[in-house]
Length: 118
Image 1 (cartoon, one colour):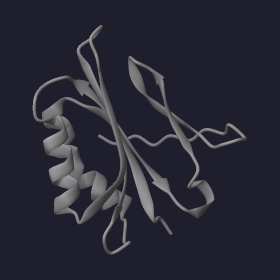
Image 2 (cartoon, rainbow, N blue to C red; image 1 turned 45 degrees about the vertical axis):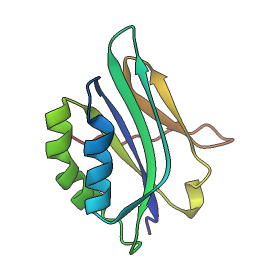
Image 3 (cartoon, rainbow, N blue to C red; image 1 turned 120 degrees about the vertical axis):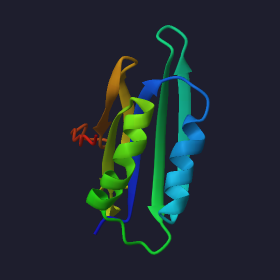
Image 4 (cartoon, rainbow, N blue to C red; image 1 turned 180 degrees about the horizontal axis):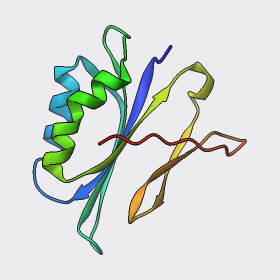
């Protein structure tokens, strides 16, 4: 059972990105467990990683992805959504490069998995 997820997002930098993403999470009953973001001055891109769960612990990744797709389109974003559960709760998320989305590396083995939304 999926207990939480990580949303990875990369898009052109502009005001309101954090607001749009966090508002969608709140509307879905989401609770942000950890959030990180940065902007790359070299290419004017915004990068965000949000680890979250839902208040009722019923995380349907397909439904969440379908609801998030219009927001991602509005932001012209590349994004991915990754399930987290007890077996990968210590997963480390890293940007594979500043010009592309992230990969997942499970500590300490280093195996990878990636999903793609949008």
